[in-house]
Length: 262
Image (cartoon, rainbow, N blue to C red):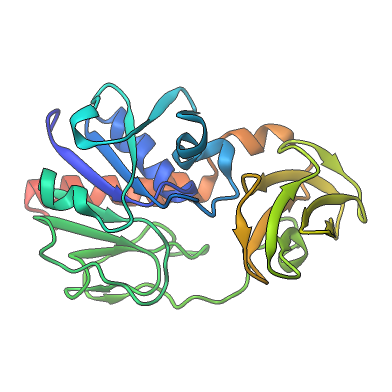
């Protein structure tokens, strides 16, 4: 297992939580990303390495590489590879699609010896060997052997009774620019970011938990960031309970498959 390669599609929050757990468990990790990732939870996402070269998540280092030849198994490797050329070159035994794409899934069972899909849109037996439930609730982190995860509700998870009001969305197409830093406290009505010349203000009192990277060209209604009403800045820089539960389901699925107990 110490030499086993896991390829993870996506390097956002839940993908990074999964990479973090598997790396700590001894797996070799390569994550693939877009050239301009639309990730708001940047302080706990290895996708930040795309912009800065290095990203650290709870003590684990992620490093951007420009080619497979530069792989360094002492860190979490992150490469721009939207077409998944790395899969054909490396031929990893485990593939995890953690993009949370929710629809138009092109991943298929058989792309690797063991394929895992996170969240809605995947059907076990077609897109992957198993699906991991990502919807908050009783089944969060459950391994699904037949069928699909719960459907996308289209509604953000509730924190302290706040759901839609937590989310900052683009009112128009344009270039994103932050006006606050992740971890900043804001009041209702405070400007947090802008798209083009249009400012987006917080709809509640809280802490800026996530924001896109500056300079990204976004479309109307794109998620730009989120506000945490719990007023605890440390939550912005640590993996969430949801992420830890999902990654636990992934690790259980991998080890159960190896033991023949799936």
